[in-house]
Image (cartoon, rainbow, N blue to C red; front, top):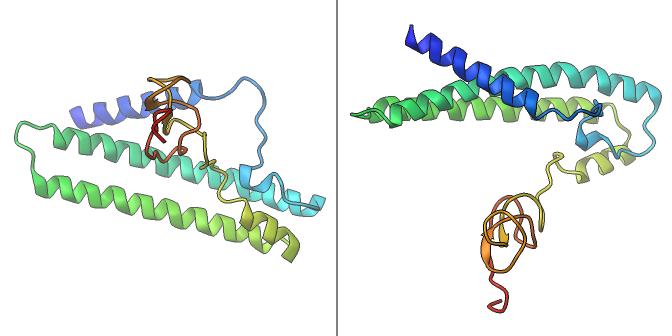
Length: 174
């Protein structure tokens, strides 16, 4: 019974956080990696739109499944007597979910690519996956003390190495 209660609690919290993260302004239904494709025809746009919503729904389900497994892993790790075999099994299950997500994302991108001309494919392929990994993006290590701009090493939006971290550099010691 407690496993079901834990699952429901995690699911409710996940959905609540997802709802709170929604902006009040209407979102562009087009994924970020499709927004700057040149010369999309109306027919191409409709076909891409038809692919997006089912994919997003599927990915939401898979991400929720992963959140549950991550919570179960955390519970296993923090047990009084952790069972390494069970922990490793859960890690493998999470890795399988990650692989499933990557495969679904790839299949989705290939479906979109199939609708594009050669020129559009070049633009589509050079846009990456919609995430912004670059200098000064996200909360990577960079300038700032804590969360905010400033001098010294910290985690704040600034001229760091982006979301993936890096070697936060203090001014004057570059």
